[in-house]
Image (cartoon, rainbow, N blue to C red; front, side):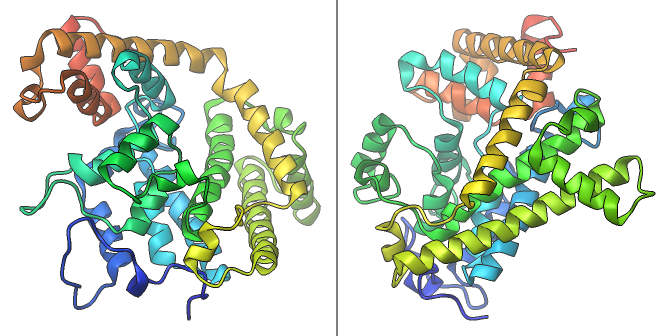
Length: 376
């Protein structure tokens, strides 16, 4: 399949920070994807929390399975829009590499610990991982990914951090946060595929956990519409198959909606190439109706799942573990590996070390350093 003119073409990539000769059998974005898959940070995602901690159940999503689902959805949409599937996959697989143990609870705790030292943003940390913290190659730190992949990984960025990144890399991946321009379509697509994926799988995990029910979800228009549709076609359907079929139909409807709405937006903006996309308004989006329904679902999940007393109790414990780990490593620097303990930027080194931990390693380290079990 030929790429659309406004897609990211690997031959027109803005390149890597460290020049490398091309590979004989793979283009730039395929190499990026492969480097991400083989990275240490990618393997750690299998033991990092999505919503439920790893020890709470074997079938709950982790950061790794979430990233794979985002990649699958992203590739499906990219193919229909004639965008670069390999670039979409690379961004999707890397977008959560900087996430802390214990999900957003860990991130919030680490950000508070780093308040006087530049803060902590998991999205910026993902870029730090691929730019500096992976140590796999003799010529440079990081994975030396293409500009377009790095642009997609940096999904959010505060102005202060954007200015700092821009000073270190003029006209680099942070420039758009200062110019208020957009990333390429492949990056925009990953942002929306991320939201589609986590809304769907958090329904599944929430029902599996018993914290929300199919009956409660009946108040959500997007869910209830496709539940009724599934039962109308399969009146004898029951149990988890009702849930699975409802989610499958929801996902399909959202994917087709994104494809149609994005095609219309691209046709209206008429970008002639990827830079034309960057200078246009955001182009990858839901229709207004689907956006409203998706927002309703997200609000439901916040009220009933993410803020459920059982989840918030675990969240509070996880944040305490991260805070106490931070204080312990700051006070006893030698408890960290030398590659972190010997750094001059002590607070950032501690944050980098903790952010790279899996849930279970963080819990083991906390118990080792404090003599107490912090969670469970």
